[in-house]
Length: 242
Image (cartoon, rainbow, N blue to C red; front, side):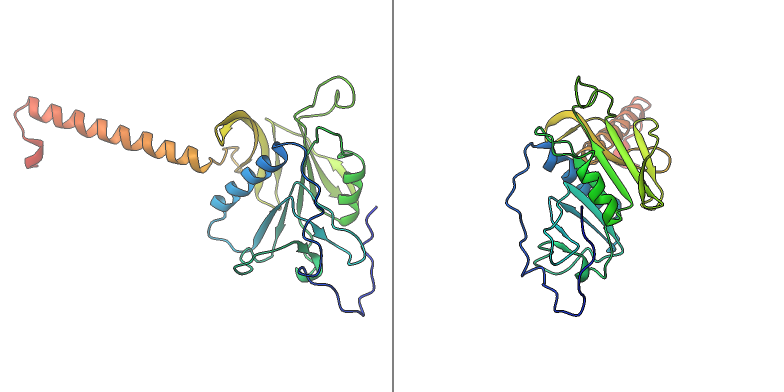
């Protein structure tokens, strides 16, 4: 269980003085790719904002006497996104005006890492408002038989409560986004991915999807212009003279 209490009448270590990695590798590709997709989407959705930070496989230091806790992904709001050329080495709570991340994400490991028990208890003790667990192994026999694909917990009176999921997504009002999942293609990989959605339930598109849509729209405009030009010529009008 995490311990948030520590003596404040001391010089607290900086991010440079704290280990920036526990040197424990993720045990599957999705633990990197899914949070990085969510980060890239936020970079587009909130392109004009500098009051948020999304960390991927980065340590959160909450007590100088305790090791960092390392979610697969986490979101903090009300902090600077741009912290200089070097950026953050870790998310050190006492260097972030004690602003706790509002959201933490875990992708269930191939080697089970107690995402539903110990990690849930840790994030609850930290006071992280939302804790999401994505489980690509859900519904299988054994430990995950009765687990949902995506479970999102909200801190209510100091305890996590599982939120209802509708149309494979959950609305997070404090973030003003919904988190959900559907089939899609990312980094040339066709599978189920986590995405952000707006209040109307529309999915935010990836950079590649936006580029493809732009190409499609440009092609349609060219076709319309060519069709119009052909019609004008058929009635004896030179489209280049208009």
